[in-house]
Length: 472
Image: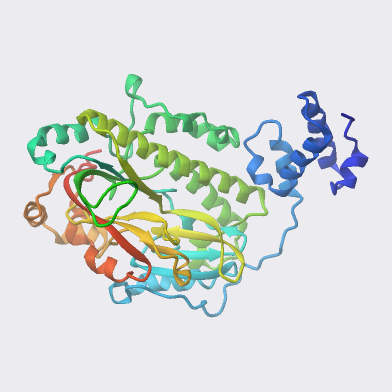
């Protein structure tokens, strides 16, 4: 088998210093497991070439961190470009000037490469909601968003949606009893869910993640406030999809994210990013970035991806519980993240980080869900892979007015009348989420016909949301 010496490591391109000592120690431990020399060298090379992937592995984490510290660091100016890079806009007529100003600012960042603005765009923090931004070897926590990996999931059941009218009490009860909404929402005791995500080794990668693991266990299977929802409805499938024939089905649609786990990750690393760029113009303060050649950048990336797996598990538990309460088994499902970042390649071959803040991945053939409001339909779509949009689409209808404006201008009778006309029963829900506060979803879908193909339409019938503001 042979001992792996420092000389052998140097011949395999390992540099002098602390790192070679760590590599020797790990090589000896791997040798004791019976691995051959070539396999050990290959394993060590994997850590050196992609250290961020090994931060959660106890044996390799210290070596991985040392590899990150030795990565060549590019000096990156904090000075904004004088003029923003050009970017395409979909649905311009329905996008406010504030969102355009935010997107312009993002396109002035020295790390920005390309961008696009989706038709549901409205003002956010740093990057507008509906903004898509590609950067060079940098991740921007606020361009991902506070609710990391906020997500849609549609489950389809091979039964008629007429069941919703025939057994309305049963379906309402499933939402009231099997969901939990609000900032402090959690499950206790026997009601706590179990899922393999809670045993993910990434929870041990950083002190922050270790401190959040219990939060994850308490909040798994819960939903947030605002526009998060779980709703029963009728789904009309237009074309064969996922083994289902065209027709009308009962379906369950949910919108939620990574709960306090994602929020605390975002809070921690957005502050670190701002500390890293003290000279960044105040207008772009919330667009501070972390280099992926830095330890903080790699930690954030690992944490973001864990939040994504947690958000997916969160939806899986919600759907499992609600469906079991009414005795149904899922026939097919469509789900997707927004508020996330991906490593992708531009048509010119350039590797970039694509942030989709309130935007849906729409690569060629990729399925996604674009919801409307509590009273309006949502759509299952298939991406067309439009490179000019960075293979993206809207994540919803998009707000027409702010929450404050909605509360000040929409009366409860007007909202309730709108829902009644469309046969929607609302359980909870604040006036700031009234359908009138959103852009018409049909116009938003029409504005991106070159980005996605509509495969089916979901019409909400029983909608569960967080109670009125102040009641949680």
